[in-house]
Length: 304
Image (cartoon, rainbow, N blue to C red):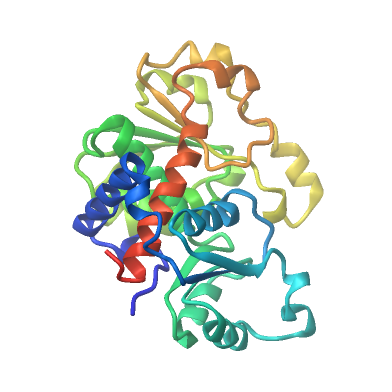
């Protein structure tokens, strides 16, 4: 039995096979529409989510399976004090596979250690968000054709942004990937990511505070929101939430084939006027998320 806790749980070759499977699912969904007949996915979400939870549910239903679960800690026995360990033991009696999101880092790993079914980490605090990373990789692979020799700018909340941390971990394994980190001082990429991931892998990176200064060199711009739920006080959040707003003027500085990604939800860090730009790929990204989660479910359930 296998779990998915972080993107590095899959080798580069395994990721390639997963994306090939997702690509085939996109081309011929009918071929896969009954492979999960009789199977049940449990979605245990201790934090609010729209895209991730519904994407998992959509993926399982498209494969012919069924879904059960809860959408917040308040609607589960966690409100009564039940531990994650006990909850996953119970869920293992009801379902064949589980996707769990939890505000505490490491909660998914605890669940996996006590589970008798495959567990997928759907986000644990500011730590990892591996299926968003799979979605990001699938989008880049589908639209760029390769991960090698790209310059990617990651903008916004780089301190608490688990999607950023996971994506950096995944991309350092490819050839000549250059990282540009764009953030205010208070939200810089953590030191452990720089030392343990970037420096350790001899990855080229730079840190800047102005998006305009680097737009012209980027192949991919990965925007993130400033996350209110990760701040300890409202004053800091209000001061930083509008630090970066991507608009038409900034897009005019970018390459003609640069693409904009965003893990969503968007607040106001990307102006709606950018949505009509052909380089805005964040809604396509959502669709790729369904295909890659379908591929992941099939792989972990050993149905392909």
